[in-house]
Amino acid sequence: MLRTLSRVSFAVALCFAVPVFAADEPKLEPGTIELFNGKDLTGWGYKSKDKFESFDGKTEASDKRYSAKDGVLTVNPGKGTAQLWTKEAFPKDFELRLEFRAAVNADSGLFVRGPQLQVRDYLVAGPYKELKKYKPQDWNEIVVIVKGEVAHCTCNGEILNATMKVPATGPIGLEADRDTMEYRKIRLKEIK
Image (cartoon, rainbow, N blue to C red; front, side, top):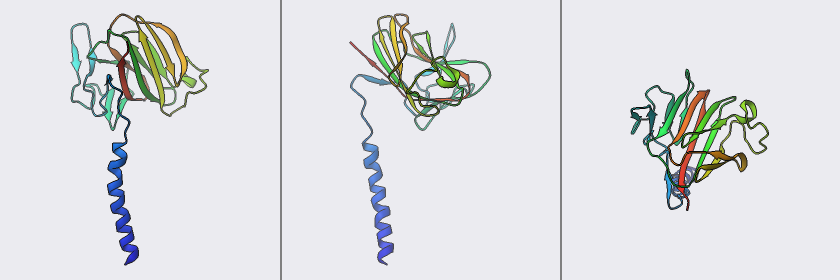
């Protein structure tokens, strides 16, 4: 009887411990915007010359190239390329942070107000094959700091592009090209 009671007590204790861990999630810094809410593609869509196809409230794009589930925005394999863009443009200086995980030889991209930074399985697909801190098939962090019309881009603290030219304003975008790529914690903070 004592063993049964102990197991029940342990199970009850676990049930109460789980919310405590969830409450310990790190808080966003003041002024930080979550570009991806972790649940669906709200704020994102496909754009053409004349229109913007919004995916607000949807968990996948109309062609299924992008999907959202459990805090991860997934770039799914398919034919050709597809570009997913934020509805909002960002004219002020900012710091953009995101995490990505690339399948072997995956090829994607991050558009910063228009120009593209390659986001790939770098050690296999390049172009940054000399990175020492890149973790294949694991989560890596990209930080892009935009001041005026220049972006400084790093992966896990190593420079990808120190002076990428960007327009004065524009949205943030992701590219679907080859194989599976996952993104999470896509956050932007205006800097002064």
